Length: 301
Ligand code: ATP
Ligand code: ATP
Ligand code: MG
Ligand code: MG
Ligand code: MG
Ligand code: MG
Ligand code: MG
Image 1: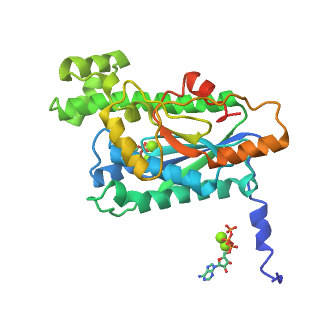
Image 2 (image 1 turned 30 degrees about the vertical axis):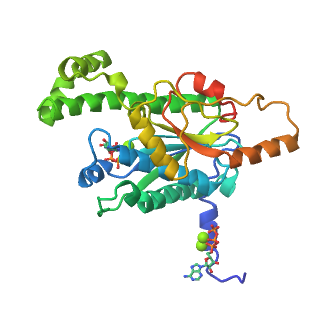
Image 3 (image 1 turned 120 degrees about the vertical axis):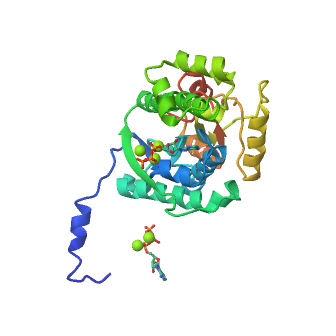
């Protein structure tokens, strides 16, 4: 490449590039921009629009496929946000923060818009078009990553219980939003459960798992599908919808026999390849307790 007298400006860029700390888990969280307004404009069902959540999940799965198997180990989505946990060894873009964040935001947004009509066939996408912001944070230990995910899932639970009660007071109880807000001021979880049950006959435990737990997306390695005794028809409908789009939703997994330790390099490479080929799955399960992680030791290591 021929040098020009203008080329010195490149040095400004190089001195301003952030390379994320090596050997740490990079978490990139994206969040819908002004989605309060966006959801109103597109008449989302309140408090939870399943179509919109499925669309978020489909866009997240697209990020997994686009980036290949070596990059993301797990992702967690709730409301208008998604967190992508990158492998500790990830060296994509030499771990340049701006490249990583902008690429994930861009892939996600592109698929969100292009898949919109699949999930909202009778609802044209209006302007301002949906866009997302993104940020990256490095976490050094598995414990930090587990705590991060627990933080997001706890947030999902708290918000969903609040929103479910808030909208029941409005839609079934005939309250105005202001009255509902006042009614819920200072209430604890048990009070909200009680309001739902005694006034509206709603058992919060029977709400959809996707609403209560959010969505967990990861590569299914060495897993077999198991049928679950308490399968609900709603879940089944979503299963078939997701299967049509080339994604498999499973209710539980079987762990691979071997852990990651004490393996030759070629064995590690073989397994990395197998992992890269493994199907991307979406589940709505508890990731705060240990059980999920104990059954799936390949996700975080
Ligand atoms: P910001 O740009 O700061 O993120 P925001 O309006 O997007 O602003 P958030 O805190 O991200 O604010 O909240 C997201 C909003 O979108 C909430 O009002 C939430 O209820 C709504 N929302 C997101 N997903 C859904 C969904 N699937 N169904 C119904 N409402 C949703
Ligand atoms: P990276 O992901 O690293 O950016 P890249 O392949 O996009 O890789 P760039 O340095 O960004 O590499 O170069 C963009 C490429 O796209 C060049 O090969 C350029 O010639 C080509 N290109 C971009 N715009 C046009 C266009 N309008 N018509 C023809 N070719 C184009
Ligand atoms: Mg926000
Ligand atoms: Mg938002
Ligand atoms: Mg949000
Ligand atoms: Mg380019
Ligand atoms: Mg370029």
